[in-house]
Length: 211
Image (cartoon, helix red, strand yellow):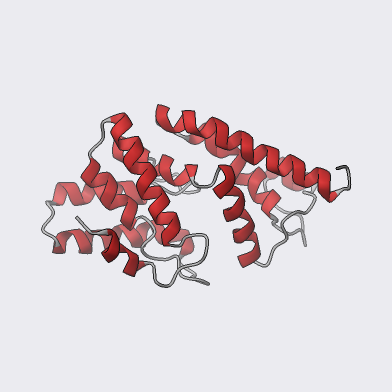
């Protein structure tokens, strides 16, 4: 089993949204969910530590396929530790299926569902607010911009339209709760979702001088 200190070295060059603090939060949440759901803790812990280990460096062109690169890296790490092939494949499935926008390999096992849920809970609540603002800043986008009618209807920006933190909330964060798998994660998501919705409602009100 990779140690936390060993895993820390894999995230020496990452962006602020996918840093090792994110990995640790996912790791702790995945442990909690695994105990609630009766999952294999060894597979869950390894997958949590390795899920963003490749393809998340600042400016990386591999971001859209980081789940695939991280799964391949996981096989190297775990094989070197003497893991059996079936358990390595179980960890790889967890990693390949954790992306919100990649639906080619949805989570099938309880361990994969837990990694997906733990990763998604980290975009909700107070941490979710901090991360989506960081994400917009890193991308050179504003915190708030009024979405166009085209974006509201299709999820695609009109020509010249920025993808603000509020756009990302509408496009992804507001839909996360309904995509979760485990009962334990769904219970946690209710409060975190409400916090995130409240933040963006307040942001709009303050932006237009209503409060």
